[in-house]
Image (tube, rainbow, N blue to C red; front, side, top):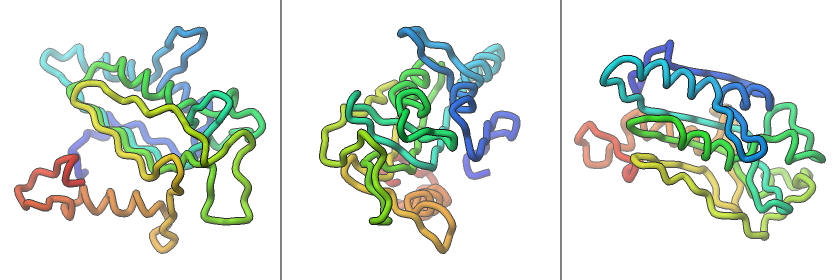
Length: 193
């Protein structure tokens, strides 16, 4: 309700599997992109003259670094930590496919850590991950786009147990709910958030 999106334009998925990510966003095989449901939906909206959709993608969950490819992955619920490249969704793929979707603006919010670290000291990072290794820089450089990520490559994304979600999600929702409007002009900008 905060952004005024119509319900028919919202794709909402909990406990997403790898197949869900590929269905919604698409996949890249042999350097050829296959767009997903989101692309098709935006294309159908563009049949209306003058329609310029705004994209807003919000992911909260687990991120995985994979040092062999110096890449970040989103961990679907069916991810096998021993087979990251084939059972997790590459963040680079998401960014690449999002850049192909025609839009007026794009906002990507990720509440996940890609460090391989955990708040719980007894949990070991995924095999092939190393928090102190360098990952390739994130690239999300389409016009009129912004990306918010809850944690840097050597940080963890903390949970807010009392609210039953991530601390970043809690603060982000408060910001877009009005508390982020630091100059009180009823227009919340990325810089204010």
